[in-house]
Length: 415
Image (cartoon, rainbow, N blue to C red; front, top):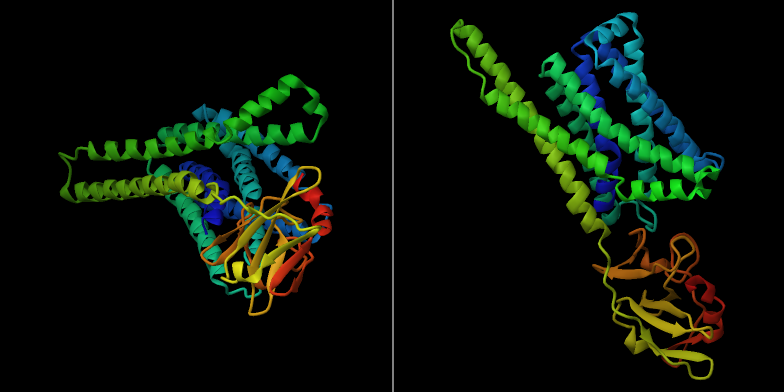
């Protein structure tokens, strides 16, 4: 649940906030056309994202890095034009009248969302991996986390648009320009990483050091963006509390008070949404990615070339981890779990997909440490998917017998 809650919020919430901010700023220019352009940009991004997800799932020629490169390049060009034009009110008016400003807005929103949305269609394909029953409780929890993240991101974008719409035109433009600068910096890091990894620039020591430095502080611009949104909300709330109404018609005063209260509500909602997003990106992310502390595996000595494990030691239905030191000194791990009255799952503590990261038991379920996929206990010992690599064995005289030659044949998986 936490895994998809965190990943969706981190991918979508910043893009929704920026899109909402741009939507709110453009509302000062042309409300009717703003709605049409935003719907068009969102529809375009949605169509592109669906096509990208389908190609990613059904073909081998779709390269996500090139897709991301195109989205980021278009977004940064559009955002740069918007940023520099917004510094001058006269330029904004002229560009708006010529119609070019609306297309800059369209490209910025469409490109930002096109970069973030494909994963939203790819994640659901992972929910039921490792389960025979699509209605398993773990699948339900993942779906709930995904839905909560989607709701928080979309709500955050809408609330931010209402916050910006309540500001003066100059304040709204300056506020979103600051947000745009932070978001563009984060986009530049992603763009620079793709260009480096897909070109000969990796041979440059200076550029490599720069890339490592940027990746170390990759999410600082996102944090600065959320902090700026939160500060904007707090500033607006404080400003609303200082508004004084006097010397006007009582009906007009009541109307203005209602408008100020409404503005305060939207700003408070924006502050809450940002706080929730920060909580998800920090505390929930830490909980989802904290290291699982495993007890050391039990190393059993081989008798001749045979390792024997009594059934009475693995009959409790829990996951048991053992170790074997290969002839070249590599420590190998293997697991055993009782699947039914007469069946035992015997496999390496590794798989073809996630490598030797291993498995652990959580609430009676066997879980992959790396990808957090829950294994179907009935399929442990069978090949395929994220299942542990099967380990040949036989059951004789109340013991599970493993030939060390079968372990030696798989030593490469742990090297």
